[in-house]
Image 1: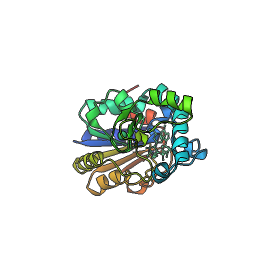
Image 2 (image 1 turned 90 degrees about the horizontal axis):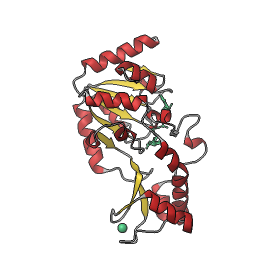
Image 3 (image 1 turned 90 degrees about the vertical axis):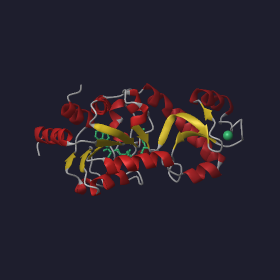
Image 4 (image 1 turned 180 degrees about the horizontal axis):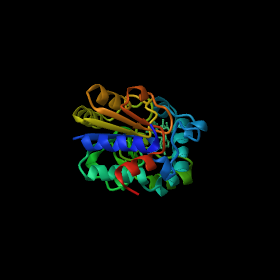
Length: 251
Ligand code: NAD
Ligand code: ZN
């Protein structure tokens, strides 16, 4: 399919759908300057993930986790929604998309004007932190000041538990409420548009797969091949901003 045809096909699928969902991964935010994990320029070329078990067991792992967080924090803060985010926001506003299921932790869907209750964050959010035991919230700036002074973040002042960004690490339990909502939206959808995910991280990648098995049309827009390309009704291996921006008429 050539470039005009695939966008026309995407437009048709959106027009004929009654209730769509969008599933996003790190790839939708690379055009905002946030690196993804698995691209040739992704974060994993230089640093490997720290598993939740190691975070809990080792003070060195916790310190390294925070070191990385403060290193990447300025990039996340400076990032602004791009054309892809804006196109998705428009589809939500027009009632075409009932929910965004995202693996991203950068908050850019909300920043693009999508109401909080339309964004389901499967892997949490990195813009704040909380105590893993009592849930007490902590702001990143205050923790950063302590880290710069003491070389480490303190434990929870209320209960002594470990403080961690409000994200889900490998090996950590998925957030129950978000999983239930994502499941309900998936089963109610007649269209699932995947944007910028390699679709190899489970259970998250299970949602597009289930949507398709449940009868929804599946569209994948991703620079590289993904784990579900063979199941999809439409696969576009090009940049998200251009593809979705053209399909939805957003600049
Ligand atoms: P991934 O890194 O595994 O895959 C991203 C995919 O997007 C790649 O296949 C890449 O080819 C594609 N891509 C990158 N830029 C693109 C563009 N402009 N247009 C089209 N395709 C593009 O990411 P994932 O599937 O989301 O899984 C990784 C995990 O990383 C997630 O669980 C997420 O929590 C976390 N993560 C989040 C962020 C963020 O919040 N922005 C950033 C890095 C990692
Ligand atoms: Zn606590």
